[in-house]
Image (cartoon, rainbow, N blue to C red; front, side):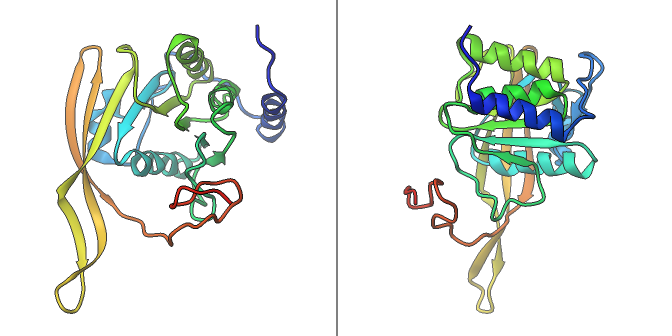
Length: 233
């Protein structure tokens, strides 16, 4: 068995100290986690993202939908965590939502597993270019989700057929613009997302509208994060 990295051991200690009330929920009685998007929840099995299971998401619109789900969890009085393996999010404009972890691609899956097993989170989102669910990695993450009673959503390309799989895209014809004084489009207000949900015995499609949040262009606001030019500071 490979040694557990010191960073993961430290995280395990911090979780125990910060969330002493965390207690895994028995698998089979955990229910679902709502996304905060009514149409999507209605299309998902049992009305939300399943706890104790792995959901694999790919395609455009994933970040916006999953951040909405995290905010919905927090508003409901539970905890959510976002493991940003590729350093794509910055805390400068992502406050008030889930706890944000940036361990790097090498440790992202292990950190997500620790968060799941702790029993302190209703929803854990795992993103990053190095996320893979093949071999034993997907098995460990699935076991962690079951043991902790959490819903895990991994933003990744490939997924076993046993997982709930979501593929989303943006419908350009559904873009809604704020119009300027001369009738010209000034800013994008909302978009329409089309999602296909697949699993064993499930194949559904759903469309829903999401508001667009506007942020200043990020130019290396935080050390070590890739900015919109693809460079690091």
